[in-house]
View 1: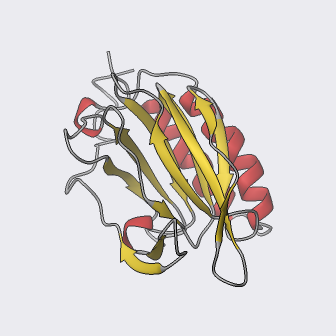
View 2: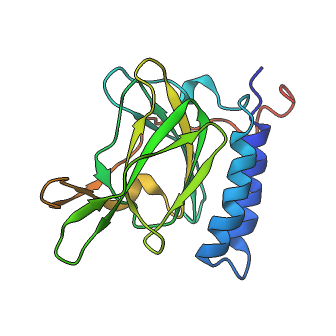
Length: 198
């Protein structure tokens, strides 16, 4: 049975973290990363509606956005073989794999505009990594499987669906702006079902 209480508890803890007086990015990434690792270690809380793949495009489902837009929580659902272009975030972010696995390839942009890739590394279920302009913000992500769905949970330091970001051409390093939006227009009910599910 699906219970949203782990997600609800995670959101409460993240709200306390970003509300603390010393909520510097490094501390949020460190402590938030531990909170996200605890969340993705169990796989009984993501409602099915926000775990559905699309046959053509990966899906970015908003699960929660802080009312002050200090952070947002998103489920990324990757169909077999689906991937992103090379892109950035412009804010801190945490990525935790809930199901399956992802291949993440970081890039660095040199002063002359060239992109240098560092080769993909694999994130397995339960693992978490961070991105931000301070520690490395450009990457490409791909479902590690060509025959099954993978799902990751992302936490960003803004309403990521409304942030102007960038995609990069692998060959020229050319840049194009975009705003991602979300794949859903409803949110999970995290509080109204407390009497119905544990």
